[in-house]
Image 1 (cartoon, helix red, strand yellow):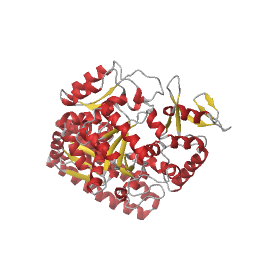
Image 2: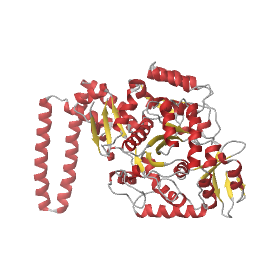
Image 3: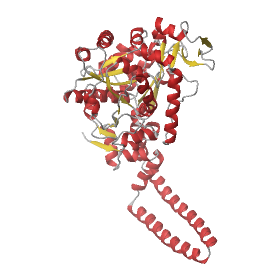
Image 4: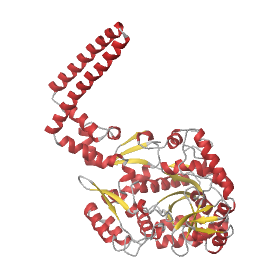
Length: 534
């Protein structure tokens, strides 16, 4: 097995602040507490009050038993109870495990915890389920390839708009999605697991948790769903401060937005003068709505208004009805867990620059954030196509399918055709340079006219090259099929594989060996993006 390491900037659509954070050896102050290259977090796990630690361990024992956690997970919970720190990551509870980056996140958290433990600082890996997110459209689908196209399996689950996704039951329509998955993945251990976990009565949260627990059973990944009352009661202090100090926290976030703008960055989460850090779950409809301060100092969720005291009363009586937004969630998480480091993707790392001011105000410390393993998995058949055409992953990511097909067509032209086009192009360039220089010497306007005309001639010369390449593509139709296969598998819809391709695809093909392989590569001796040849 071989690997290649590329700069993280090879991936499209990455925010500037994420790129600057990942590529710097020093902290990107004041937005981040440490550099991703710093290991200071290993030696200084945060303290957690003993009663809270015991309570969290008890809750995790119960949950992971229900998720099917085995001996390794319970041993890790025992270590957490005894004082170990935690390396945490998390994600939405997407259908059939979601995209490949699900596995990359979990593998990175496991590897970082293993490395810290080997260095003499006991740590355990924890995966936080984002079950309280209410955008079902972001979680109800998964993309799996067939030989010639990418299929998006979408579950039409019975739910109410705004209902937390984790509590949505899969319903009877899950059977059709399992049948489609069977056609695409084939029968095997993974499909057996999907059949066991994704049942009519299971929720998105339960099924996702059981699948993830099973995949990383050997490594003892601890899975947490903190949406229940007991967890919210333990984290009530952070939620209470989000109510009582809402104005102060809002001002801190607005000031951070100005700092980001002054540094040339943009905020990931929009903060307005009346923004809130909380959502309120309606007692009757179970719809999750933003809880916002009104101009007169009261509160509003949807169309319902509340007095200043009512949110606090709800927190005391029914803490599970109040939940943090994207900026507050990491702080809520780290008041529950002894988090030494959080493993995040590009978007999480970007909005952590805003969250930092909330950490400082509410916890008096900031959790270091580490980038997850970023990788493209290259299967043997695809590697063979790349080798035949002398292509790298960078070639695929740098061009559109049509552009790469043109290049391959040009390469495969007969030698005499290549020579004729090269000779004509070189001769044209030589003559045009001499001609435009002479005409510029006569008159500046004449020189500009000559340059315009020369540009048109160069365009026509390039058109001849394209015509030659297209003719070759028509003669050798396998070239286009090869290009289409490369993009389908490595850069589907011109998005990174890790963000589009379902984790289930790779688990079905490589089974138990895949988690260990990803954990091995999550050491991240390559600080950018890896091409991993399977």
